[in-house]
Picture 1 (cartoon, rainbow, N blue to C red):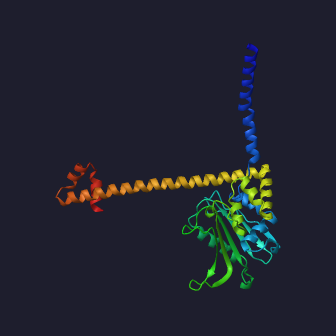
Picture 2 (picture 1 turned 135 degrees about the horizontal axis):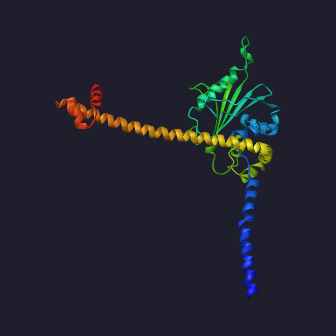
Picture 3 (picture 1 turned 180 degrees about the horizontal axis):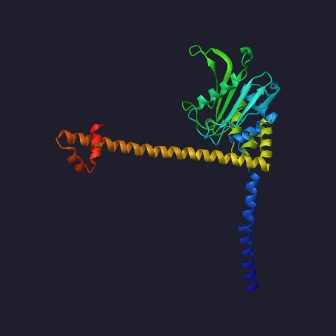
Length: 317
């Protein structure tokens, strides 16, 4: 009986050890194995666009063409763009030149950006005008396309998740020129489940994916998205790329946190200023009423518990 009890106690201890130690280590290993980069991090998106097949599939979806008809796309290296001297985050964009000379600039933007339209026009304008030098003819200017992939709501007035914008006559809708074209992809507006989608909407669902299961399901439906998923898995296993991804992800997270903190400070300061202005206006009314009642400034200062100089300032204002 004692031997049986000892054996049961030993088995219980062994089970606790298995539950507490190996299970934890295995869980960590499993989490590490299941790690997958997310395309909404601009570093990951830019890395994916370096793959010619992935790039061809996405560009074709934007152009509304079959991928086989897009024969050549070339990535043009761009420097990390800074909005200002104090900008520590910078912008990672992808600039692609097509076979016919058309240039397509693509940006992944996660946090809300109030003046996004202004910035898009500024940069697409720079790309467009940068095609010619002094003395060149205007016929050298080729079409420029800007693609905004946004993980925030840019057009709150409706549920359309994809827009193609060109220069048009406001009355007839007739297109004036196609030399500048804007595509806006709002990932937040995608329906919760796949609606038997294809083309640019299918790519939007991939770019907004959050798990291996989502990526795997989409990879089964499109060979170009399958290529993107395979590339995503390779990138996620690359120690150096993963480090760069995590650094970039941390920078974005810190930037967002700083922006939110600044907003909160601004709100608190605004409230404080409002309260201060309210107090000042009340004091002005009190001082005015006492002056009109015939009291001297000294009497008013004593009555309100203020310095005489403060009462004088309030009467002057």
